[in-house]
Length: 353
Image (cartoon, rainbow, N blue to C red):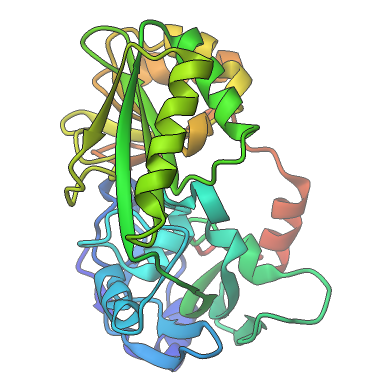
């Protein structure tokens, strides 16, 4: 079905009232999320642009169809950034990033999208347009629907405008690779780091040709960063005995967990670190990378059915991001009474799919 270009909230409201089932897309960067199954397609790319930006207040309001790369460029001009580190930044829209809850490796230090979204303008399944949350950091207490929209996949309401708090970015970065013979050795090192005084910008790991590799990134000024790197290296050598420590070049893809996961279906899995050993044993030779100290796993699998079964057995939910699939959510179902109640209020006719 050919998508219908939507340029205003009013047009979106009319579109929802005129169609029985509606699916939203921006740039279509997350291919596995666009199994519309005959629903009318709403193209939101025209809802784009920086609407309000207050660098001194560290807030920005943008259209949901704005490419993430445009947002990042506008913030970089003022030395600021989105601390949740949106993924697929070269082609994703900010609305799709929020809907799929796609934070990157740098969220390790400050948190994910829910920690930085302040408010949104939305259109619900009945075509009603309204604002949720606010445009300032301090808002009134109560149920914050804007945070509930994070990871919602557009099932409750369609976002047309989003407001975030932003942070000053660090001027310099240094990244290290620490090699360990086994996964338990690496996990013990992460446990030590999490209890140490070191504040890391990112902490990822993945299997290597021999053993496992832990990637650590520190951020700071050109004056303070070298001695911090030295102290970190010396401390980890003493406390966790890595077989090697190597400084890495800060390439554009170094901290992109999806960069090397090509081919097959790319899946995101949220898991508690205590389940990593069992989960990893179930993967066999599946290509994977763990982010945020092990709280997220990114996989490229050629056997989605087997992964689905493994996730269900371990009680873990997964979300397919890239590839052609019948259903993006896999694994253990997310049974949430609150989500069902919100759906019944905002989309009682179940139009949003």
